[in-house]
Length: 112
Image (tube, rainbow, N blue to C red; front, side, top):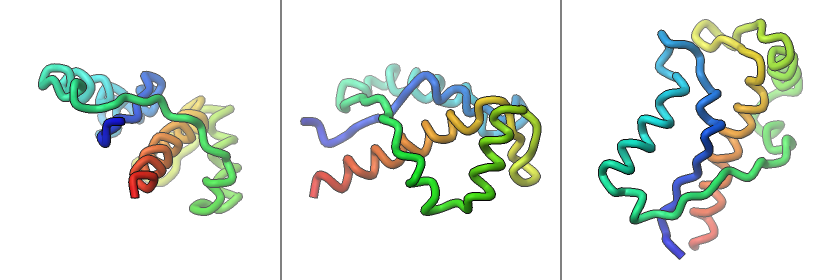
């Protein structure tokens, strides 16, 4: 088993706060293309994120905040601070992003 893993899904591209925001969905594809160009994918294992239980989110966010994100995911209207606009589906793609991070952390911890 390779010790280097890239947790990736094309669905992460949906985490996009707009063309004027640094958190654009195109950054994932650009990074992956750069990895391919540099032949870095030959030296790692790629894995898809496995969704974590939503209970994990409760460790770091209040229930009011989680409800707000779920509400915005349905309506597409709302903000999470000055620089983070909400959009339809934000809860699902945010859960996917968190899941990728948790999966990677679990992978690292399992090596010790």
